Amino acid sequence: MAINGFKNHPYIPNSVPEVQEEMLRELGLNSLEELHEEIPDELKLKENMNLPKAFKSEYELRRHVEELLSRNKTCKENLNFLGAGCWQHYVPAICDEINSRGEFLTAYGGEPYNDHGRFQALFEYQSLVAELVDMDIVNVPTMDWPQAAATSVRMASRITGRKEILVPRAMDREKFLIMKNYCGPDLILIEVDYDKETGQLDLVDLKNKISNKTAAVYFENPSFLGFIEENGQKISYIAHEMGAISVVGVDPSSLGVLAPPSEYGADIICGDLQPLGMHMNYGGGQSGFIATRDEEKYVMEFPSRLFGIAPTCVDGEYGFGDVAYDRTSFGHHREHGKEYVGTQSALWGITAGVYLATMGPKGMEELGQTIMQKSQYAIKRLSEIKGIKGSLFNSISFKEFVVDFNETGKTVKEINRLLMEKGIFGGKDLSKDFPEFGQSALYCVTEIHTKTDIDKLVTAVEQVINM
Image (tube, rainbow, N blue to C red):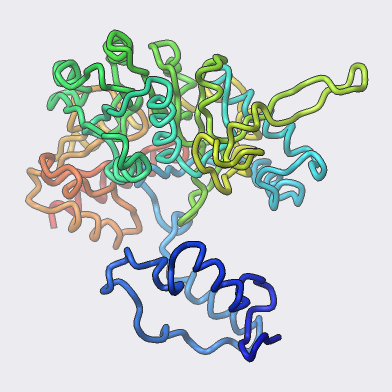
């Protein structure tokens, strides 16, 4: 198809030259390139992309992709002690069975006219997570925990009208940068130091940095470094005394043995759903949640969808639908949405609902107890190796813990390389993000690790540091 001698894309009406010119005039621009003038010139590609020739058949493409995938080193062939935000848990077969059904697999949200149980499934997920964290309201999932944390503090900023957010120094640096990017430039993230012996949030530093400009105090329990934050009630009290909101990030797999943050003053709770029935997938499988009390000031600040249950026009019949839809960016007045929200990870919300329904309260309790016992055993056994401190901090840990290798004379990078030769994924190297720890690594132990697995790790680490 061509107009006035110019070819335009058959599926994109605005590619018609006259339409493009009209749009550019309205924007006060002379060319499409001016839309991207803020991008530094050195970042722009100035030649054709070096793309390989197209495969002639689906079979050839499949073989090529399978060959690339075969180069991966996975947790099926290797013993894994790496966590740091994506953890290896057991996934019940029913989770994969349900989330692979066509009604759910290709439908992250759905609308009333084409819903086949998604609204109810997401309502049940919200109800189960709400019971787990002891809150009333839970959203349709965000993309991951960092987005959930960033959205939570932005909610707090809108509620309080303040612009400063206090966050722990001892948190995942990637999560910190995502929050900083998501909150900037109007919100300011201020780091609060930690106690060097325990890892706990430094309450003196917290009191020195909190002010009447503080919208929220964000902390995590368990922390990114694995230890359990023992001062949750005190932190929330300090926040509330200054009129700030207490926002707590939590690993839901810990809530079978640890009190939910709502019991020590949390106003907003967020976290990652990945431990609840999701496989570890490179670049996917993460999903965040946000929970609050059923108070209008919180409910109306959620940018994402909330599903509720309500009676229909038929006596005795109930239906599931959106709550306060206009506050979202895809409501009737998009410009009035609390934040822009795109495609989310509701499939993982349904998966988490299946997992929680399968486990039940007793199952979650047993999960937490098992993880606690196995991680403490790993700390004890690693501490028996000469030159190694099994836990850098003297606080109790859940699932993850910092192993100190400073006295071994080897770097974590070197140790991990040698462990990999033995078929073991070592812990996350913390030397870059936390240089004050020296050569230390964050190790992870979950319910999937057997005593034999942990003993194998200990033997391998002992051999590696003595090479």
